[in-house]
Amino acid sequence: MDFDFDLFVIGGGSGGVRAARIAASEGGAKVGLAEESRMGGTCVIRGCVPKKLMVYASGFSGMVEDAKAYGWDIDKGNFDWGRFRPRLHSELDRLEGIYRRNLENAGVEIFDCRATLADAHTVKLDGDRTVTAKHIVIATGGRPSVPELPGAELACVSDDMFLMEEMPKSILIVGAGYIGCEFACMMNGLGVETHLTYRGAQILRGFDEEVRGLISESMIDSGIDIHLGCSVMELQQTDDGILAKLTNGKDRVFDRVLYATGRVPNSAGLGLEELGVGIGHRGQIEVDEWCQTAVPSIYAIGDVIDRIALTPVAIREGHALADTLFGDKKHKMEYDNVASAVFTQPEMGSVGMTEEEARRDHSILIYATAFRPMKGAFIERTERVLFKLVVDADTRKILGCHIVAEGAAEMIQMVAIAMKMGVTKEDFDRTCAVHPTMAEEIVTMREPVRRS
Ligand code: NDP
Image (cartoon, rainbow, N blue to C red; front, side, top):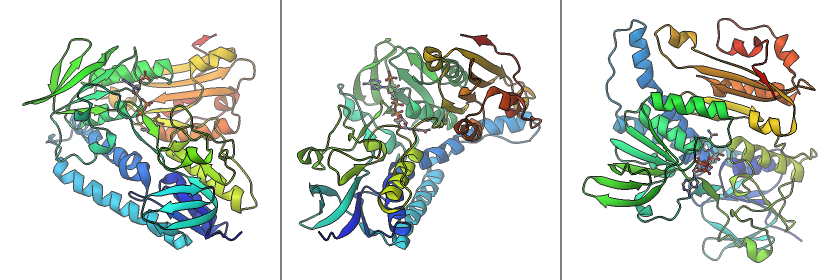
């Protein structure tokens, strides 16, 4: 049977664009891609990229104080969102243009519209138009989800934060995962009175306990008001702002309320269930290790399969799929030892198992050090950094590495390479330090702080 396309991708985010581009440019496939919003998806338009630029912006407030303490004659002014915002958006426009051009240069035909499935090989585009494809990839990503509560419509989500007309004076952030904690640090750094409420006992569930403790203390020390074991019962509009009623009784009015309570896969309304594609209870498309659904011609990658909701994971899933379908190099995404970073202040980088996870199946040794880094100690700053290795006591393999420090995200990338190679504690021990750095501590920890 002749198809219009060898591959049709629904969704122009990181994963979809990579699958389309590699299939067309390296696999020689005829490829179509539909995107109903902006090319680049969550990462480029309303996620990682604008977030990181705002993290940079927010970091300058602390730097001015440090510079002063280091002897600079410098005064901290106010952050002007009105100057930053247009620059941010022109950068996003530029990146969106690059994504589009890369697709075009690879020969991918772009459809700027919503696409749904009519059958296992037919994609319905806006209006009555349909196209056929031998393979179809769903790469529709995810979206923020806000739980039901009275006044939920008054809350905003992370997407809205990049479009704000003006900086709020105060903000309540609900949820203490990646997004909640990153926005709390950003807003606080930009001079906004910031409160964070979390229903559990400690922020950043799933990360190493000591890391969570240190970041939470640093956030509190930097001026963020963290309400633990606390939920929002109701939001009400008042003349002064949004009144948040909290279970801890500390009700108050905020200029903005941001819900960072997780994201859900964009799988609804695509016609998937009708065709027999499995959808899990969180809305995730069910796929096998090759990202193939129960319908053999339909694949899914990225946040819509909800395995690890990170841009580089979606990119690798998309790349592996394109290679597998059109190249002679069949391979699949490896989900072990995927490093990640949380861009809080201080930053956190993490790869492999937490101490708590490792303890379940391994006999372990913990090597850790926490100290005041030279840069801060010089000006009597109290912030500490943490370097921690979780080591298998029998094989001496590094099972996990967790860093809380300025530049932790950059450092953990390097550790992730070593871990992929099966690095042992002895490999760390025989590596000569780079001096004077913070990271040298990771190769100079001689004695375990505990074993279990
Ligand atoms: P997370 O799942 O990380 O965090 C959600 C937070 O909201 C948790 O604290 C959770 O609590 C809380 N929560 C969930 N439901 C409710 C509810 N009904 N009421 C109150 N609180 C609730 O999601 P995020 O939105 O922060 O991020 C989504 C994903 O995006 C991340 O998992 C990550 O994969 C990706 N991401 C990665 C970034 C990076 O790499 N730096 C940055 C931003 C996002 P509890 O812990 O109790 O479940």
